[in-house]
Image (cartoon, rainbow, N blue to C red; front, side, top):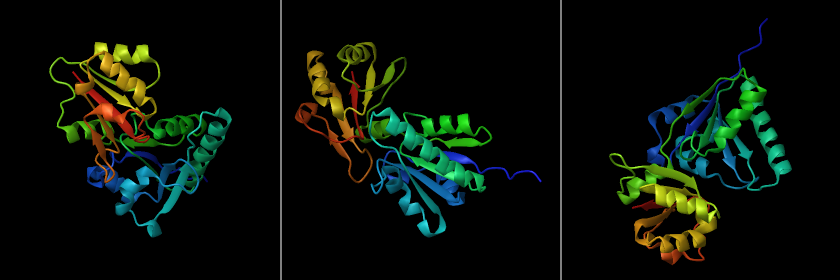
Length: 238
């Protein structure tokens, strides 16, 4: 007898926050998958991705698999939790269950699913992996502001915000539009840099865009010493 074929691992982009921005395909895959996997920061904590989709899921009909991905730079802790998460998913796939891993935004753009996919392919190459694209927070922010990100021959950059002032300056000088992701932790130096370059009036900051908890700031100077949260980005459009 041949071994049963494992289930399919899906990476589902479920959008930036508004449940109505979930694609029809992502909705169908969630309905058809026996297991819904979702990332969370720690045991017992809420999952932003799950909050987006929970209106479409009946937990009584699904196995709800919460996977802990701690917010830490300790490599030993990260390796331990990632190994555990991959094996939790593999266990369900071995049972022949399709697993839908839901992630905010798009699964191929700075997503937790990227690392899950890589590890699964390394350790269990027989698993079929499929992804369903989703609307990113970048698209959601542009829509919220009615702001074209790029037109004609203009150039755009997507940059994880860091304390590397020289790199942030270079991105701003060399592109017509820059989206700085996860900007909350470096807001003060970013605002100072915008002031030096005369770009404060060209910037906006958005947190949990399109969700019920969305916050928008078009006067970025008001955010000095503020902490608008992890899911915060900045758009600078010259």
